[in-house]
Length: 478
Image (cartoon, rainbow, N blue to C red; front, side, top):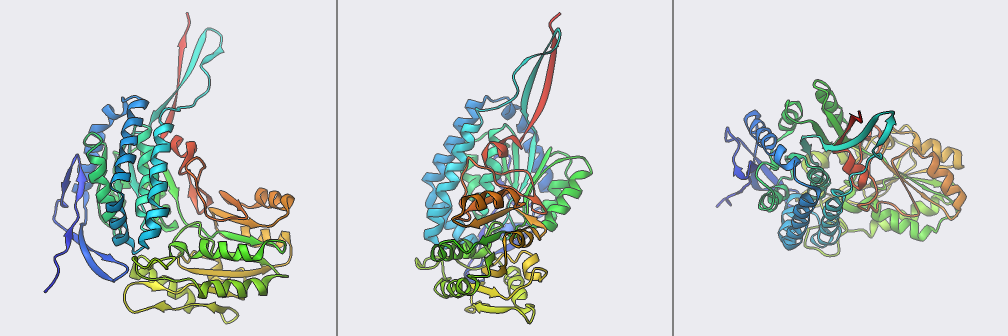
């Protein structure tokens, strides 16, 4: 007997709908490798309907006061707290993540971030009105940009959706949001919750694949396209948006250097770095997966990190002893395995380096040493539970290696020398530098990178401002 798959649906203009042409795709639970739902494979007609709804809802939503939008976002945050167990269940089915860690590490920050942007709605900053020309008064208006087309990734489906819709709605925009084709369940549930709070058309969700996202970005209605995804996807979005000069917000890949000096607390560094590298199966653009260690402690560090990896557990979502779950999909499992299979002869796998089990997409905590700066695994994002270790001789070489990649999202420095930490943080070419820690984020501080890691900021007042436009109004006093 075959189990009937749950049917997920688009949410457009306040109602749930199948794709206009009825097409669907199966949604796979990565912890089992088996389908548990079907999702709409939305086409042009669905994109048109969602954009039309968002455009129709925009004038009224734009004209709400900041305090009114704040109240709505606070209601959404409260509703997410009340439905936390449902959201966790949907996200775990989406991703295979551990239940306990999803409950403790994702839902509370999400709720906090929504509440932060609720407050940001009432703090629209601009330069002082005044007479900058004789006989004329100038004022600055900060306005919403309009309809926002947003594409969220599969590594943090719920949290990345929050990072997108919360500042957009707070600023007075309307939203058409597309989850990844592999992780639509929690976003569809979000639509049910948010839809009961906001006016119809303000928040819309359409499911689909890359072609669906491409149609959203190319659509003439959105004033802004926002994507969290691969560099390749970001480049395609930027090229498509350029055709009608859309505003673009890109959070793309990362290859975070973790620079460990000889004076660091080695035991604590190994413990923290292993967690920051393996958490969420390394499927994090800021993950601590490229470690640079001073030559004097290199061998000791590698041995300790390999031991930590051997003691790190991956497994099913309901196992409270696991740090991380499966890779998200079969393609990602193949990509991570491919990096290990193609390692050069001078590389050494110190721990892991293999798939775990024959059900689902689990991969062992892996440590690789003996690598050179131009090796593929150093230059390209693995996006899996693989930590590489390189040796450096001095501060100058550490910076050369750290900055010697095309990504520039996040980094960290591990040292007890305050002056050295300040020098490194100044010279590291990354959007975030942590000192003696790696990966914590707070709603009040910006997240975003340089180079091929994209542009624009998530979180913070800077992320809020990205969803606004600035208008100068000048009036004659005569």
